[in-house]
Image: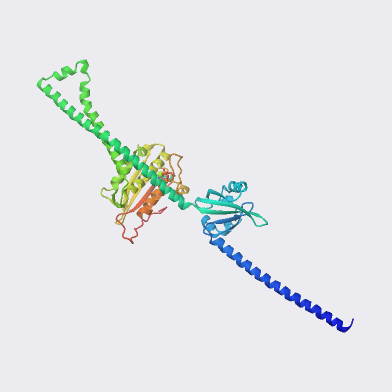
Length: 431
Ligand SMILES: Nc1ncnc2c1ncn2[C@@H]1O[C@H](COP(=O)(O)OP(=O)(O)OP(=O)(O)O)[C@@H](O)[C@H]1O
Ligand SMILES: [Mg+2]
């Protein structure tokens, strides 16, 4: 080969290399740009995932958590370290059944569930679906926090319950009142008539000494002296029984009165009324009310009626639970407080609460009582009424095996618009 031919071949080869080099350079740049774009889009997706207002979790085939967004962390009050690699059954106990439904029904499945990791139980609406990334199959879970909705439902149910009970109680009180009045009038008439008969008998004895004893010794009238002595006493007992029934009916009527605006509420009659209405539960117990006449708090009377009744009934249940015998029960209602706040205390010698119960008593629907005896709505409602509606405080001290004291801190007067009420210094276990 001649020199010239060789030179030409070399030049062609060099040109090819240059072309290839520039091609590689172009491809590399393209790849680089694609990688950058991919990274950016990945980051955007990640950000969208994190910014989603609802909790989202991605699980693998074995329902182990792979990914989650910030909302999910917040809802479960978990750290990324705790949640990564955690079997979802740990906080979502019924997930397996729900995923089975997804496999049968296909598409997305919605289910109401109760999640619990470390904190309290969380009512959620969980939507589950399957997807595949080409390599593996996954389950995606989107949750809706139902706590607010449940709280609203609770409130509504409570309002309806109160309304129904109030209407029933007012109706019964009204119905009972009429015959009560009628019986009472007739008893008064009998007392008057008997007094008059007695005076008449005495007058006859005076006019004809010995006649009364002679006649009353006849066999047919043998029991007359006994009747004469006993009838007034017996009527006296009928009268006091009637007075008690009248008092209960009046308490029931006042208690179920829907009440209107916030106003000064006299505490002594309020406590006595709750004791009267709760009489059935408190039967046999020694209930001491040490509330000065004239002491007032500022608030809604019907709310405070409810709170007092629930605390008394809770105390009575704790007493029966501990002693089995109501006559060993002691409940004391007393007060203290300062010029801005009055604190009502309801103290019982019931069984007290272990720390695990103490931590949960204000949770809606938490109860240690059997079905039919408790619904676990009492204390959450009391807290709502005292804290939210009155700007007051509700807390307690409890010693297992010794008893419990609930404290209600209430404003004495309408708060000035900026006025923060003075907080009592005892241990706060709620409020
Ligand atoms: N005085 C108390 N002594 C001991 N335990 C109490 C006392 N008060 C409340 N508890 C505990 O707190 C739980 C919740 O009380 P709460 O009043 O909210 O509901 P409940 O009494 O169980 O039901 P409901 O009031 O709806 O009828 C009770 O089940 C009980 O375990
Ligand atoms: Mg209760």
